[in-house]
Image (tube, rainbow, N blue to C red; front, side, top):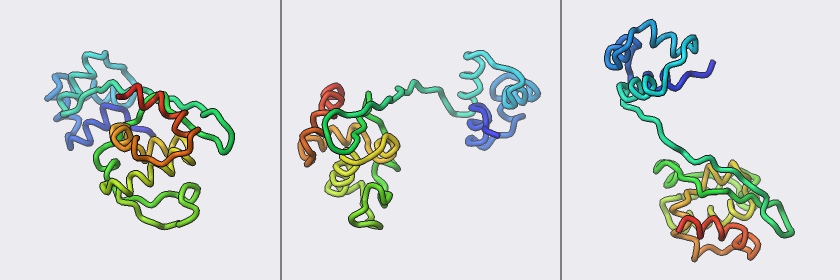
Length: 166
């Protein structure tokens, strides 16, 4: 069973239902009903309870992908540049075989500018939408953009998204 937003926030904060209910000015049975989906809190109540658990709601842009134009292998292009957590953006990674077929098992250190550029070149050329969301940070991509070695069709397809971010 998938956890509700309120339950996830409560558990991440290390709180019991009773503790969160007290902090959030509601009853434990009401909080339980919210967490179990038996009752639906208002937005104001949800915000109050999330803040009581040291969490907040965030507006996150939905990223949609389209097929890039031109010949060759399929090319995915996002509607906006994704952002990664710091841990993801600067992680040590091994790319999956469908991306790194010529040197499987190679570890890339995304905190190293050269390794990060190589990973971004591979993902932009050959990656799926999920690969872009997993390995590419938009701000770091914009910073590296002038240095990346990319085929013309890849650069042309991504250029409008990069320009929109600048």
